[in-house]
Amino acid sequence: MSQGTTGITYNAGTFTNTSGQILTVIVSYSLQFSVNTTGTRQTFIMYNNNNNLRYARVGVSAVNDVNNNNGNAILTMQNNDYFVVRAWQNSGSTLDVTATPNSNIQIAVL
Image (tube, rainbow, N blue to C red; front, side):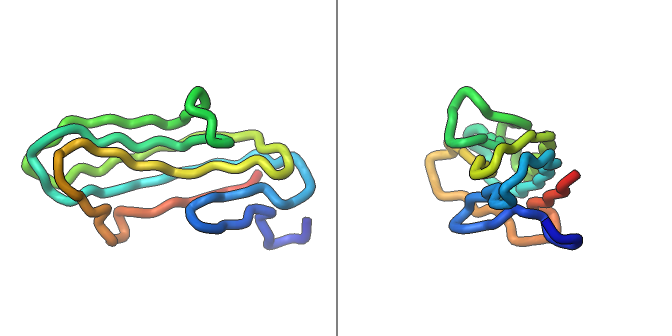
């Protein structure tokens, strides 16, 4: 892997280790939901689409305010392993993830 590259590729919401090497990756996310007073919000990092491998799972009950979920995980990724950051809510209506600096995903490869 050359200097300045991560070895992680992104496609349709999925981050994949395409480096040909084992990578240790720090994943940090912050997702801000729009205001709604009903239900629960959850966010998590899912590894290799395995429901048993959910990292940095955050769940909060709704309040009449902005909900901001933050999580971090350190993943040791084999070549072709992948992860996604997922969000779930059960307010009974559509909620937006607010497009602000408060909603982002950051990756650092060690």
